[in-house]
Length: 453
Image (cartoon, rainbow, N blue to C red):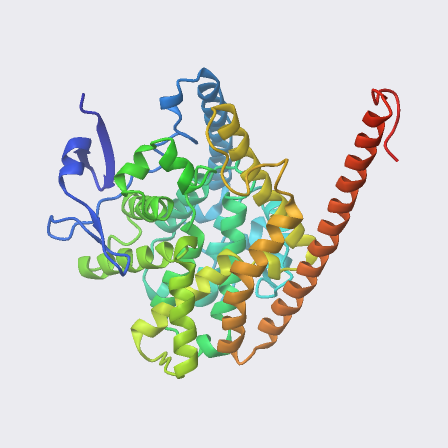
């Protein structure tokens, strides 16, 4: 039975059967070819439940989806009330140079003060999200667009910009402990810090900055809170659509394209320019696929070894934007301990939730998702050692090194040492507990009514 899929290509609606017939294929540089005059299909915005477990035939999941939908509607209504209260949407745009636009009257307090320091590495995105009533991503992006003059440069319609950013923020799932809008705002703030690095800042064009910030904000949009292997083994339709390759990243990209077209943000630009922007956004977002880490790292190291990076070349600048976004996406271990620890606990909680789902439905538990076997310290030490350190050591070389890079490496080493101490303590306590239990059992005790020393 053919089902209809509404694709966000203006008012165009495609049948699923027609979409499949287009034979979408992925190219090495991250572009999609459709075979229909290069028209890029866009995913329907927010069209899928948090996790599609229909093949498991469980009613419990349906209840979770309905509950999540109710929460999403309540948040949407709350955010719409904020939008309608904004004098921006009543057509009154601030005239003062360098003003905070959306924030000059509505966030004169601590949020505006924080934005004045948005380029500092100790920026607390959790506090900022609370101060903006959960609108950290929209607020941050509007501010950064103003800082760079992107609104004037691209002649963007402020209402369309706000509509697009609201869609992006809303399509992150707040019930995800890690992959939510706060993570997107954190990555965007980190990206801003990297765009200001002297080696990059003096060479980047405004289109480069626009693409870098947009990709950072939307790089995980509509993330279901589970990883690609989970989607593959549960036969999720996205895994089939993208042939088990960069499944989530492809969905994030095409969802972003859908929202761009639905909002009409770039509709005033020449068609070839807007299409090129969509493709470049795809190339940036697809670079965040962790399975391509070695591919990008090897190329980066090769450029550094040959000293042949020429940032006057558009292709080299784009590559460095890819590297910067990859760094921003996994920079949590490079933050101060108080912030880094929160992110570490959040991502592990998301892993553990996936493991609980897999256990519940008799699926093989994915690596790092078994709460009984994979401790937070052990997960973080492995992540830092094999993923974060190699990439940031290369970034450190690229910046020659900058003050920010030195600060990040200092935090990274301290945090790794901290996790090592916690793992040692955790392992020692587990050993003592096991020894105590074995001793009690050998003595014939049942262990009830006594505390473990």
